[in-house]
Length: 185
Image (cartoon, rainbow, N blue to C red; front, side):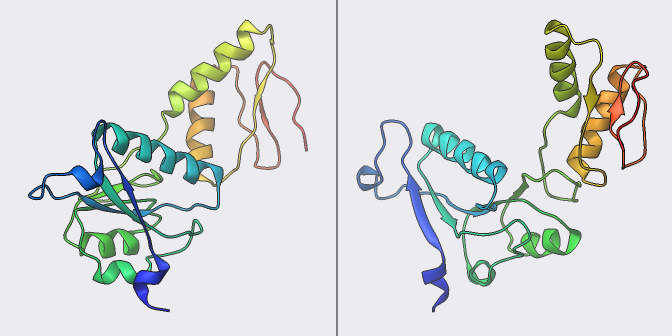
C-alpha cells in the first residue's frame, strides 16, 4: 500500500465558505492531526479541532486512524503542510516533529517541549468544580480516585489535595479521602 492510501484527507469549510468556491489564489492550510482515534478523549479533541476549523476555516486535515502510542506515521516524514497538531509523549517525537519545519502544537500536555506550545486541562478548575458539585449536593466526605503515575491524574490529585487541607495522601493502593475517612485497600 502506498503512503497516501494510509492517510485520509478531510476538508472542513469555514463559515459561508465552500472549498469549491475558494478564490484560486487562496491556499487552504494543510494540517496533520496526530491524535488517537481509539479513545474518547482523542475523538473529543478531534471534534473540537473540527469545530474551530469550521468557524475559522477552511482547513485541510491529514489524519489516519491511530492508537495513543502509535508513533510518527511514515507518510508524515515526506508530508509538506502548514502545521501539525499532535499528542506528543516524548522528546524524541517532539524533535522529529520540529524537524518538519512547520508549527507544531501539543494537545497531550503531559510535558513541555522547547519550541512547541501545548495545552492541558486546568487541574485546579477540575478540583474546584468537583468539590463545589459534591459540596452543593450535600456530601461532607468525598475522595479523589485516580491513576497513580499518570501525569494528568497526578496533577488532578495534587490540585484536589491543595484545594482542601483535610485531604490526605495515601499510597497508590488507596484512595485519597477527605475529613479523615478511612482508606480503601
